[in-house]
Image 1: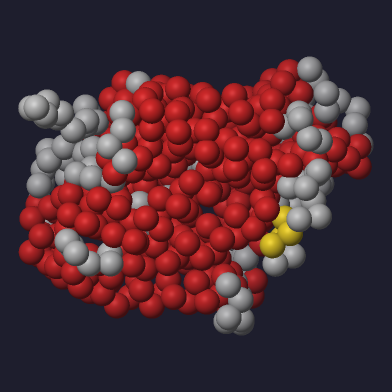
Image 2: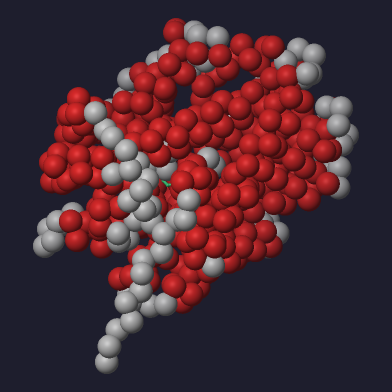
Length: 453
Ligand code: TRP
């Protein structure tokens, strides 16, 4: 029997590549974490450190992932197998795929909450509620057995539906629509926030440098967040890299995606903190910031209903483009390694992840008493993926490019579609060999609690 040779799918345009990769990068992390940790660890002071890490460590690792992917044109597991046959490197790829699967399980739950809040906003449900009532309502919602699933499952089906249509017509096309929309919404929210009386206190919290608040923990948080925010360490960008044509210049793509991710994080900070401070509210962080503090802000803000709807649409879109990338890693692994059709792989991956997500969701209510190391299932997955798998994955990817793939192949990949100065190549390899692995090791040791400042 003869095999029909399939041409591997590719993104069709440079803008499509950037929209898809930036879509993966811009997610819940930019909106609910970045503004808060920046303020907490000294505003402008933290920002300087964060930017240095993006430039010095995040961008080289992004480049490494894209390079490995494009070189091998395979899923992360197959890519390491192809570039380093017979070695154990393939397990680095497998680790990333596992991490993506686990992360998406809880990411989908949060995205579901965001969808529910679009509807609550439209019903004007925050109006006249005290902060305590908003908090109780949120806690009751997330711990109820069925309601969150009515959003999480459709969200996952929706993510799967985008992937069914493939790379060009699914991922790329949806990102080309959703990313500009996301930027538009965030700018509208920025204008609203900045025109509120008293908004400058929020800008001060976000930008005014206070080096006394920049602790060792803050420095490590900056590096850890640079990783999470750029979607590094899980092989996502190995997967996306495998769809990038040889006409694209990977160095330029890396710069554009990193810039977009950072710019959107800053715009999110400017949309959120000035509004929170204008009403004299303590920001809080994470889920509390977006699902309790912000509804309180919207309830008091002129035009609050509209801006609340826009905000939760923004959050859902940001989550969706990231979920698409997380699911794609698992799908392409299933389809290439188990040799099954893409449709079947989408169905399989979506089902497994949705079921894990159901357990995550229930772990906040009905299954609360089942814990791992004192954490419920939801928090345990978050902890495992963000504090352990992500730095381990990132560290191995940089070691792989620095020591195994080598400068010749790197230089060949980097020169495609443009040029890459020789000194920068030397710097890149040096970072991959020594600087990035050591820096990431510190983040890992701190994250798992073996190193404390
Ligand atoms: N970067 C996304 C955010 O900021 C989250 C994310 C999507 C991610 N894909 C990832 C994080 C892969 C690590 C690895 O929310």
